[in-house]
Image 1 (spheres, helix red, strand yellow):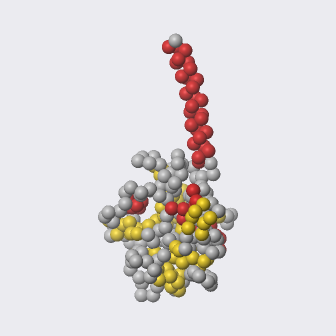
Image 2 (cartoon, one colour):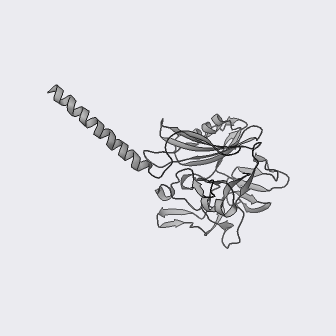
Image 3 (tube, rainbow, N blue to C red):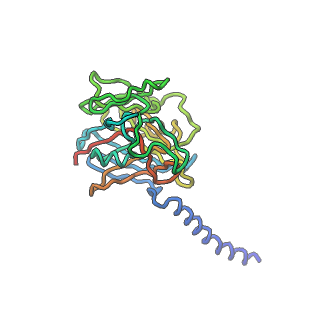
Length: 293
């Protein structure tokens, strides 16, 4: 009897492994492989995919820009001529294609917004929206953030493409607000939430501003990536070398796209608008990077 049981067990185990593998394949189909990787996207620009399984599944997509190599410049989504808002909503892919940047992530939160289901949501691409916080592009301020009871932290980009947080230059060129600061003065902000897990987007710089870090964490996708807490996001940025860092809008907005070698648009993460993997959400503004190639 014992030998029969052992033989059955050896027959069942491979079948079980195949079934588990099949389930995992279905859940990861069409998404970036959950395998750590690192390679050069462009001269001076590195992409890393970081994968963790404990305390929960987390896939983070990291862009590291060396501003001393290759030559880069930055762009915040310009305003549009549109009624009832500051600009037209567009996906991060649409922003990249319209502006000609090589790298793009989603930006600040915005209003109006709702998501009641796959067919009942706002905005669609082209609908009028306004960023939550202070925003400027190419020297034009188009959102003042005054509707918020609590002012959002703000990233500023000077004409020389120097990035500062909460310290505006004499003449504001680009400005992009975010959800909250994660790191200031090289230290993680005290009291960051360490319980709520969602998709996340963040931007940071090292101490002297040479390196810029863009991070998008996938989330809300069982058996693939749950997301990250703000504390985990801050720790990830600090480990990379960030001296200052700010969280941008997260959840279904979190998206990272790049321009491929043939000029095609490549989504590097797995966005999750309306809980549909791979679906991009139209958002208000974005942070883009021009790379001299």
